[in-house]
Length: 433
Image 1 (cartoon, rainbow, N blue to C red):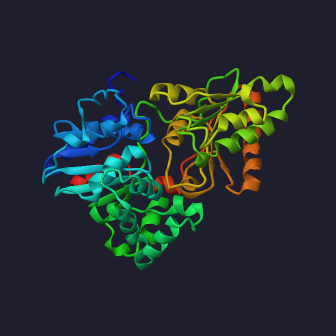
Image 2: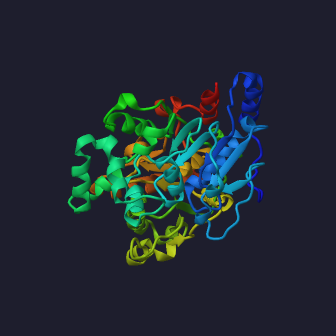
C-alpha cells in the first residue's frame, strides 16, 4: 500500500466503474456526498473499514463533490493522508447543507463519538444513511453520558433506550445505574434511538444486526429501510482459490488480531493454547507460536501478558501491539490458523475475518451473535466448559494438517447468510437510483 492509501483497482472495481458509466444518467445526486467516518491512522478496525469503503466506492464517486470528515481529536497529532483524491477534513469544519447526502459510521468505540454527536441533533440535510458496525452501542453511549462528552449528559441515556424499551426504559435505566443488572445488559442493549429516528436508511453487516433492530424496536413499522451489506473486502486481495495451495511455512503460527479485549477471549485462547502445547512432543513445541496483534489495554483492566506468564507459555506467545494495515495483512498471511472469537458481543462483524478468507487462512469463530452466520472453518462454543475443549480441538486439527502438508488453507465456503447480503456498491447505487 502506498503512503496515500491508494490501492490498485481489482476486476470488481472495473466492473462497477463500467456499471456506473452505463447508469450514470439514471442516478440522482442532489448535492455533496459526505462520509463521517474514522480513517487511518486511527487505531480502529472501523478506520480500516472507512478506507476500504471509500476505495471500493471510488469509481462511483469520480467527478462528484465528496467530503470525508473525521474527528481529528482522535489522532494524537498524526496526519491523515488523502484517500485517493479525497482530502480528509476535521469534522468540526464540516458545515452541512440541505442537499447533502451523509453516510454516518456508527460504532461502539470512541472513534465514533463525533458521529453520534451529529446524529443526536442532525442538521437539515437531504438524506442520512447510517452504517452500523455494531448492533449494540449501549456501552459507548453510557460512557459518553457519564463523562458528558460530545454534548451528551445523563438524561441522554434514557432517551437512547426509549425506542427499545418503551415505557420500561426509565426502570431499566435506574436499575442499571444502581448496579443491579447483569453485565450482559451492558453488551446486548442496542441504544440506537438516534440512528432509527434520524436515518433515511440503515446499513448493517449481518442479519443478526437487522433482526436486532427489527425485533427489539418498540415500533418496528416506524423503522427506515434496512440493508444487509457485505463488508468491503481488501480490493487489492484476490478471493482465495481453494485449488491453489498456500506457501509452506517452517512454523505453525496461530494468530489473534484486533484490539485486545475480554470479549475477544484472548486469555481463554492463551490458556487453551498452553494446555494443547504441553500435549505435543518437546521437539515439536518449538515449531508452534501464538501471535497477538492489536493494541493492549491497561494491565489493570485486562492482562493477557500475565496470563501467558502464569500458564508457562510466555516464550511461545508474542504481543505485537497495533500495526499499520500493510503489516497487519503480512502477519495474517503468515498464520496457519486464526482465532476470531467473541463473547459477549455487541453484534459486530469482523474485517479480519474477511481478510483472512481472502488470503485462504483457516479461521475459528464463536458460535454466537453475528459471528454464527459467518462462513468459517471452525465454530467454538461460548459455554466455558466447552470453549476450552473446542479451542484445543481446533488447534490440534489444524496442527495435524500443517504437520502433514507444511501449510493450511481455508475450506470454508459461502452460505445462505452470506449469499443474501448486498454488495455495498450496489447499495450505494440504490440510494441514488
